Length: 408
View 1 (cartoon, helix red, strand yellow):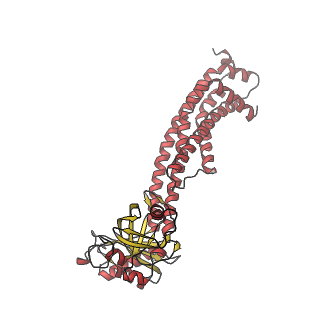
View 2: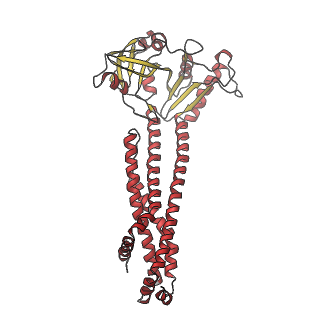
């Protein structure tokens, strides 16, 4: 008999004991569903992290003050606008260095009000953060120096305060301070609990002097909370990080054997760290899926051994009329594989449905199920059937025909 005939016989045998077959495949169904969800969720998380890093730019160094490090006396744990100027002046590969302050504020426009994040920055904010202005313009150097009451707003703020109306030229209040919208930032989306478009950007001087309960920090008047440093495309980011650290160490006379009172990290480092965490996450999920598949495989082996016992006389009869050892082995091996593949297809449908549900709940996550994932599910199912069906198939093939025919 050819393989097609064996598949027909396998389907007939499985249909004869339908309920037993369904219960036997539960382990495979659960295992394959876990594999599908694991791959979809892992790829979605990885895509989300990559998208967020790319939205900021991989050539970015972020510097934050660290009050636990260094010995810089009165300057301990403080960064200033002068530090940003020095970084841009002394490192040729730097395209822009943008200092920033941020604070949660209450914004009101008409009868709409909400809380959002306000950032005080310089005009380089847009370029450093790889952000587009879809309508309007950026604020100028003169506006930044004078503390003009102007703002750039994110797409979420636009939608919540002004709806579908073009917000450029309209005004709103931030902590009671009137601000005029001069530009709308392009939508970047969110993820991991962070909506990048829920943001208002004003000049640093405006944030310090004009906003009620202004964005102040301890230290000198030009102290900032973070400095974003953008390097030219193709720059070595490991060397870039060292250059930034050397400039700041030199400015504050921090020796090499002292811990700096600032932390600098690149987006590449963040991406590698996230990929490492995701790798561990995927391994954990793979372990859960593997346990389910092993349990399902043991169930397959058990039911195939029962099937061999129940059909001993049939095996003897087939051998008596000319079936070879390899024919008997192939028959039961095909039956085990078919049983697992059917369970795999059901698991694929359940896992795919779960992935679609996650995509609806988490619309910002790029959760997809590609042809490779489908092939993985079917391949894993067939491999389990082959591995755990081999022993029962060999046991059936080794039966002695005369003894098999006498079996009651």
